[in-house]
Length: 338
Ligand code: FE
Image (tube, rainbow, N blue to C red):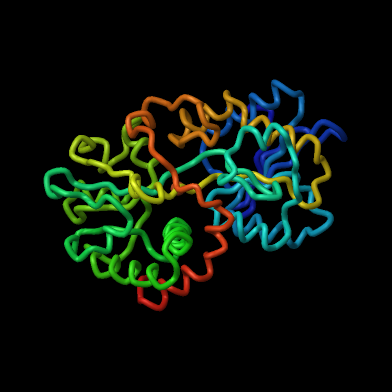
């Protein structure tokens, strides 16, 4: 962040202000919370002369704020993570359609909204990690996680977490509700401990010996390769991983998304920013800065992400998957998965 900026915070929403010229600005509401994103913003400003003003907060607060501001909202762009949150914002009518030949060419169909309400700019695969010394035949599919052969071995986040919800939403999309219910029940019965913690805590469970198998997004593991993450990095050689469903439906991926706000006062600049996010240099930041997989095919991976390797993604459209969010919450509740 340039040192001429002011940062004003009330509770958890921060206003990161540049100048507010009448022209040449774009107002971004962002729930991405990664320091490394600073380069994304400063490079865009240097390249275009457009000043970025950012409001940062968690997704639910930003969504509520945009709803409250209505037609007077200064928001040009909403950046968030996870398809189910993006879907919620879309249900509330917070985006507008964008038909950009650049974005349509760069971002694969399954990673963007059919009518251009939002676009996925980076991918995080939700995969299976395991303790090499305790698991000889690791699960190869999401379905395997519910196999009684792995009784008492699996660690997962809480069902209230959006990653857990979107994963189950993808199982519903692929297998139907009945199979998804049986899966959630079987998975719960295989848990090594009550669902708890973040993704890094699932990986720490492998190192501490509490868990033999854990579900986590790829970028938490890649981060522990790139820099020291307490409780993981020192024992990283003992952790193996499987990209699930490679011979069937492909591995479930989630996205970090951006869309132009319904009432954007600076629509053209907003589209320019989204197009910039799909450029090769910006795509590389997602990989180098936050250990994510680029959304644009053919962009090289950072060393930490390359260590995990390439895989085949589930290509069911993410907005189709996210439509199952309410159903997945109901299934977790019905089987008692907390
Ligand atoms: Fe995360």
